[in-house]
Image 1 (tube, helix red, strand yellow):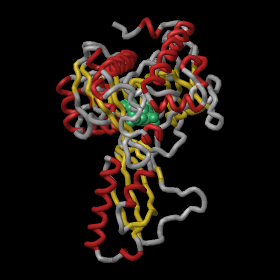
Image 2 (cartoon, protein in one colour):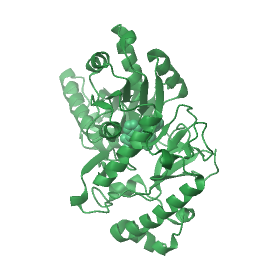
Image 3 (cartoon, helix red, strand yellow):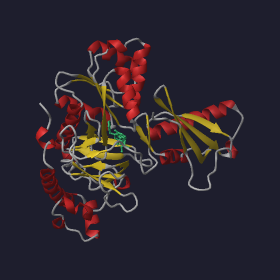
Length: 432
Ligand code: DLL
């Protein structure tokens, strides 16, 4: 069974009508159920009745990550908590997480969208798929899991962190598909090679995303493992993995645009750009009940193409991502904002707000070193005192980011002072 073949093969006109119908319903829904949207619309004298079709979308105000943070944790939910059956969260720009809630229907639609993506990657009922995205508050693990179960594949919920077990089970179970970050898969390919197991795997497809990667990296993965690798995109605010995915032609990622209306915006004017032009991607969730979002600015840079793909699908395609408009980094699949480090360091009396993050990739695994300047009045040559302070800072950073970092204390006044915008990140990773 091809998931949602009918919807994916809708004509552009049919899609326009469906999106229009859904947007009209959504605007009425948020106006009556989310005070935040009601106020925002009232502020610009906009009533639900003013939105008559998807072409009116530009009349609506944008939503940002800060709006989610300001309404932390549940302020943007459109249903009472009794209707929410799952919570996920991702990093906020400062201390607080960005929290999203799903109703049962939201989870069904999420699974449907992921199922479409997996189907595009050739995964079917008789496949055995290892899900090696993190399970937990991150949407990767459980999101991919739901879609794989929906198509009836045999799901192995590996999560992250134990490469040896993963490679052993890949061989022993005869896994035919894997879903994980592309950098982790490159690492896995090295583990397999080191163990002499590459020839014993039955893998045919990988569904990789959650971090930026390149065509070159895709070819490298395909060559090393003799498989086909597909690009899957998503973000927790909008849903999680499965917002878009590429097909065997790899000419952009097909957006599940019956559920997530994409706009690509000029980064200065915030007006929609023409097909092919790069801009910031925004999504309106056309069917979400738990936390519907209107024109949510993803900060991801891409371009859009509404022409029919060589595969025959008519859905809009977004190009491989070209970066971000903000300073968010993705380290070991985890979203990290430098401002989170800053907020964490403020809690440590002995240090100054001068820090430098050095990100690298060793054996295809990301590493993070945080160099921190100590307040001169606490600086000492005494090794034990420095060790204790290093441990204390590492703990605070781990708590704030959810990932570990190597902390290096440096002498006062040694980190570069910038005359313009402060530079807090050196990213040495090369996405080949
Ligand atoms: O990363 C959801 C996800 C899980 C997608 C598993 C794909 C696979 P967040 O943690 O909220 O959600 O991070 C979202 O990650 O705004 C992009 O900047 C980046 N990102 C996600 N997928 C891709 C991709 C998940 N395929 C943020 N290519 C997004 C490039 C990606 N960047």
